[in-house]
Image (cartoon, rainbow, N blue to C red; front, top):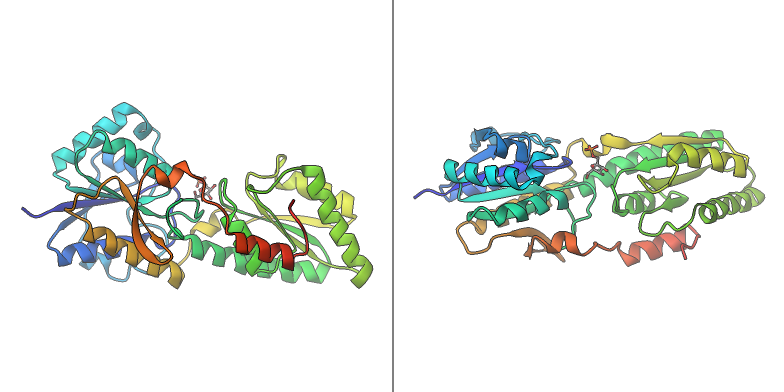
Length: 332
Ligand code: F6P
């Protein structure tokens, strides 16, 4: 009998999700599988809101940001009743394999569903945060870095013109991947990361000391700080005000926000998306289930779903060392 596979995108949308959907649909079509897409993440699964996904529908999709399946965070699916309803709906719809493109929250849901539904479950990492263990990178992460970097470059121009301090807040929820790499690639002067942040006073003292040293050497200077969201206890405006007072400089806040989630995916995200989508389809009908597909040193791998969230993914040591060296400040 023809296999019926279904896809949903869940949690924060990420550039490259469409490229991944396209790869899954085309690879599935080559095998003669039927493909459905659930709308708005797990909500579509609970309400049995499904659309047919055909190769024709995939035309011109690879480069589009967002997700044609829409995405959402779904509270009712976090309950046992919700998960049971989803399992029943999957069985009634005759789905053999469910693909979930999302982050660790979505994978926790998928894991719970796996206890109630006997079909095959495969996760694909899609989030700008890159905070999913078991894969080198997540779909959307590289594009978000690019978006942040191009914005910080612009901030730098006006910061230089006015010799001002600028604080640029980037997303990442509780992980500093985006902040660290955006700071590195934009030659920012300082970066505040959730993984390394210790103390408000210490951070303020380090930054103002550095600004003073530079002023003594060069006269008026600009200074750009990348701040990961949710790190500074009083928020970006509090940090801005305290820094302005301490450094006796004009300091301005910029929150990049959801702009980082949009836009056409960069090549690295497209390549990751199509690789993982195709690999996931190659697993359909095998005994492999309850896993995420990811890459490990560029090779496609499968990882049991709990391993994607049980261990916190560590920041790259080389990137940290590079930043410490080039930005001339220590974290410890
Ligand atoms: O997980 C992706 C992400 O963009 C995080 O970086 C951010 O903290 C969060 O989603 C924002 O979520 P929402 O769009 O639901 O406010």
